[in-house]
Amino acid sequence: MKTFYFSSINLWCSKNLVDLEFMIGNIFNLSNEVDIEFFTNPDEEEVEYLIINTCWFLSSSRQEAENLIKEYDDKWKKIIVMWCYTEVKDDEFLSNLKNLYAVIPHNESKNLDIIFKSPSLQTLKSKLAGVKQDTLRNFLKNIGGDNISSKAFVWQSQDVRAYLNADYGYEYLKISEWCDNNCTFCIIPNIRWRQKSRTIEDIIQEVKIMLRSWIKEIQIISQDLTRYGTDLYNEAKLVDLLEEIDKLEWDFTYRIYYLYPDILTFSHLERLAKLKKMLPYFDIPFQHISPKILKLMGRFYNEEHIYTVLDFIKNNFKNAFIHTNFIVWFPWETDEDFEKLKNFAKKYEFDSVSMFGYHDEVLATSSKLPNKVDDTTIQERVWELREILEEIYDKKYEIRRQNIQSGFIHEVWENKLAVRPKMHAPEVDDLDYIKSSQVISGNIWIWEKIEYKL
Image 1 (tube, rainbow, N blue to C red):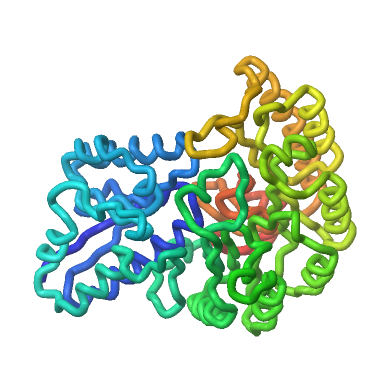
Image 2 (cartoon, rainbow, N blue to C red):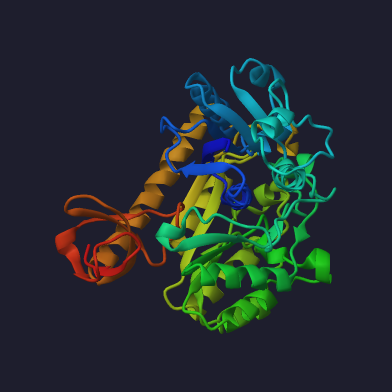
């Protein structure tokens, strides 16, 4: 029996991680005909094939992908490059690799080659000797993109999935793919398609599979969660979906990511407030507060709407946790615009902020805008806003110190623990680092829920 000993690395994107987990699950479907073993550590000597699931959203992420690919190519792993980098690939870089085994794009409608050099995907077929042709065909279909429509790619719940985060009790649930927005700083519209949602029935089927697999906390994601269902049902159906999920009888919670504020209404929020299993975690990417900058970004909401949404959340959701994104020093940003952003941060004291420094992306519309902020001003504004945010975080931490905390153990050392507070999102928000003596109740083991003092 032939062997397929492999590992994987996922770069940044949790939406792509879902695709990787389905791919790994479908590889394991071949285990009756091929000797397959998955290693969590890609540096293990036995690992022959390495799947690198890539990101391309920023030029820095593309550079990171190339650095990582080169690192493992030098370690003589057979590299399988997957997903987004293939859309903006550097053929010269790939052709100079010694061990490139396969390149798997999201789809073939962009006339991308699946393989850039020998050995090719055909070699993968021959290497997996003994596998029936029908099985191989399905295998290659699932990892090579034959089942991807011309609009978008979404795994279906009947596919097999490997839960890479199961040890930590959570997993991601992708309910739609791609985006109908045209934010000027984003390159998705240039190399992707319009939104494609999964049906409510298919999503509920997958949720049940996740719950039977002992997933206790479901992370619901998409490019734009608020617009879920508009392509299928001609209206936004996110809250309808969540109400169906909330009816399920299992003991679990879920949180939602990436709510665009422009079509978020009081009616939506009032219905969300009635849900029993939804964690009051609001991930809303405001990006800025200046009307002028929001317009230049292609964001079609104003500051009054933002204030209204935030006030409602703070007044109607007990223990609400609000995460947002800011893009600083966008073209045409003046001192006045930046002051508005600083005052916005001070007024609402966000629990968590992902701060991005603007830089040109060649395919993005914003790269053509004049009046870009100079580097010196950029650095000054970064430090100003960072200091404001750190003061807010310190204040909130002192408040938390006065109360007993609840969270999940993420990692254990001799007498120290890394704990994810209950309201903090995995891979997004900070962990707490405590001593085992600070645990008030609960067992000290990975993913155990504990109560503790800071």
